[in-house]
Image (cartoon, rainbow, N blue to C red; front, top):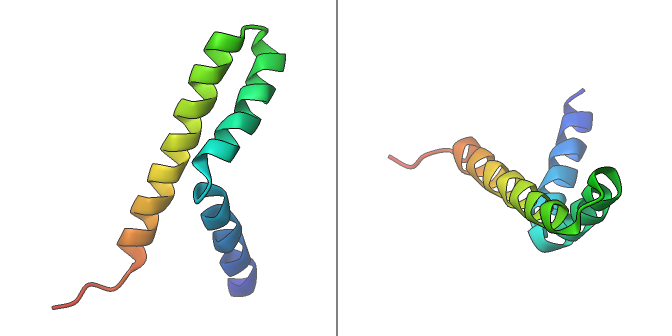
Length: 67
């Protein structure tokens, strides 16, 4: 189980390292679903940067703190 979680963590880290690429992908998906490019672009970029920020905070909290 630990190996699966480790691989999942690596995938999430790789996704969060490229927020503009994920934003573009989400923009296309939202554009198809919503039918409005401006709203889709705003939502896609917003969601992708929130994902990147959440992964960054998760990585910082996992790192052992030096005393």
